[in-house]
Image (cartoon, rainbow, N blue to C red; front, side, top):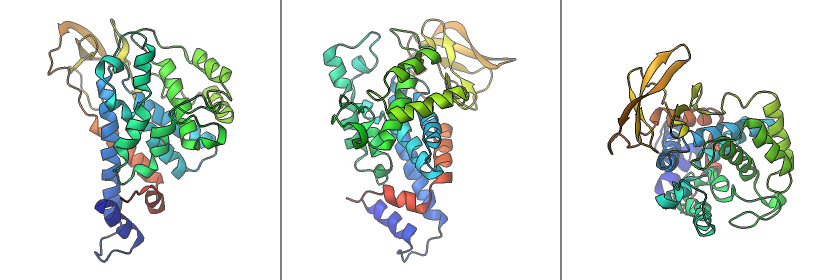
Amino acid sequence: MQFAKRLFQALTGSSSSGLPAQVPMAHAKQMLASLLTMAWFVEARDPYTGGHLWRVSRYAYLLARQAGMDDADAAKVSLGAFLHDIGKIGVPDDVLRKPSRLTEAEFSVIQTHPNVGRRMISGHPLSGLVEDAVYLHHERPDGKGYPLGLSGEQIPMMARVVGICDAFDAMTSHRPYRPGMSKEASLAILQSARGSQFDDLLVGHFLVLAEQGALEHVLGRSDDGIPLQICPMCGPTLVIQRGYLAGRHIYCRSCSGQFMLVPTAKGLQAQSTGVTGDAMDLEPALDADLIRRVVAQAAEHLAAQDLLEGLVFD
């Protein structure tokens, strides 16, 4: 892609444009933001996964650092985690939002999302930074995963990290057919699947994080310090974006219920108004501030060389 070539020239100093160093990094941040925005719209389609991408991204960064990765590699893993489900854009709503367990045929549709995601990002200049997470996060050490049936060390480290964090968040999150599991029950499942479904050593590191209390500020939240709010009908599915003020109405995108944010000693709380939102009320609002902060946190640890390694030329 022409953008990737220009960014490469600027970052390597081979460009004759005379651009200052901060210009290519600014362009790179814009490219990262465009990737994350694409991923966010997948989450916006599913009312039961509010905050999932942010939580998996934060868990993945913590696990990568606990496993001994440096800040740059952990930042790349974190970005991959935010983008891991981007292929679900290609999954029909009646499957993605089904309020009961999936049939075998429907699960086969879900299993297409890693390959769809890989194709979606293939034309993006920074796809190389995150492709392993997007394409391979459902592979398993025992070879029983998908889409390729890789096993053991064949699975890239980024994908192994994201697979654990994705599973933990899925287990602890509410679903229409079951409430979220407790942290302890979810950790027990990870422990029981060490070496088969999940990487043995990485699960050990994740359990250490749990023992240290490092997961608590992520669990059940949609952003730093912002817990999910509870819809009486649907459970903890309501997301409050940073910057929302008292008196604002938010809506449950599952049951369409309207809630007003009221100040309490514990911060803003969502209280039902008994009103049902219309189609315009239920339109998802892009959390641009969250995406800017995720990009800024990643860019803080990524040097020009890290970006060059992620560049893909056509």
